Image 1 (tube, rainbow, N blue to C red):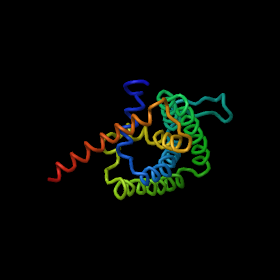
Image 2: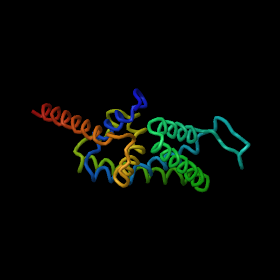
Image 3: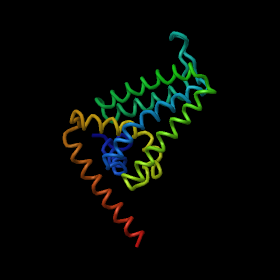
Image 4: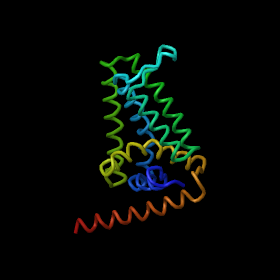
Length: 194
């Protein structure tokens, strides 16, 4: 277990406190990775900072590549096993998004990205409004919410499907802390409404 910026439990509890309803988690599981993927399509069109000609056709080091690299390294630092899977998924998203962006061209790509982002974002806001009854995490901490969203849903799937825990006791610890956070939030909400 690490502390500071690489404290998986702290980040998971923060994000999980905004995502405790099973329908809202399902909505996020469906929509978070497509948001990540379509963002990379748009980032394909950022200017390269460096071009590596050693690869077939060259490799542009642009915002898309740097974003994926940072996400991948962050996930591995949080948890080597699940983080490696998240890093692999991130790299696959990068390869796929870059190929799709090159085939579509900018004039079509931004329309596809806009449509997908609106659909996925609206779905998530509905999940928060209807099922969670709590505003999205990104309104309170944008950077943690954006970084943790893909990893959170992956850990939720791994935990549900395979009972995966980054370390023994992780699930029980985060669920207890999420429960405390939600109780404090509900008490604060009740206090403000009275």
